[in-house]
Length: 244
Ligand code: ZN
Image (cartoon, rainbow, N blue to C red; front, side, top):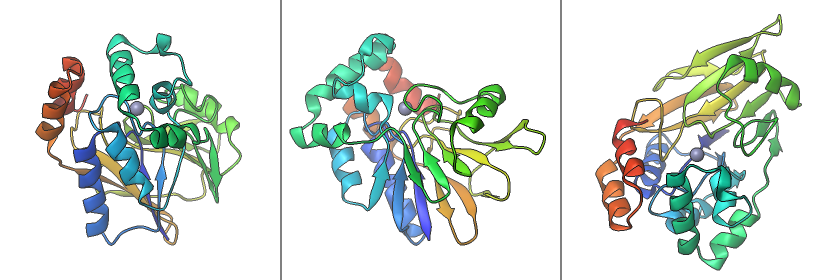
């Protein structure tokens, strides 16, 4: 079976549809595994939720998903993120709010634990260092863990001596999820932050055990124009073209 790993769509419909087209072009998948933050920052929160719901999927809650429906205080958001979140809240339909409110913070499926941030702190922790990865391996029971939140594609592997290795994921390069436990981040669909502005996602093939990252060019300008039209913060508009 093939599964699409999607994280941090962030209401970027142009990026999301480009990724969906790319998945189709590659022969499709059985199910989407979505790692949270469907909304926040971007100009199309409701259309992105509606589109995701058309597909067979599972999804965990991200910090922006919860903040947009008032389940997480905005005090911990930076001013631009908080502004975008308040704007997002006004765009959501009752059906969207009900859906976001139904998302669990942790999903366990087969060999995988799925969270937005980290298994230790599913909503908030940015899992980006070997030190935090090492501690987080103790916080989930399955062999593998899938995370989002940092918008950077990577794998942390737990080595025999208990230490952690960092493996960067690049476009079209496959990684076998083998004997060692791993924490995998497929990067961000709607707001990549690794210096590559193309949308990032991965396909996991359970038959071969390979996870493969894909980068997809999309119409960044179309998203930026909508953001400007809706008076979303310029810093959020500009960062899309830099992938930072
Ligand atoms: Zn995010």
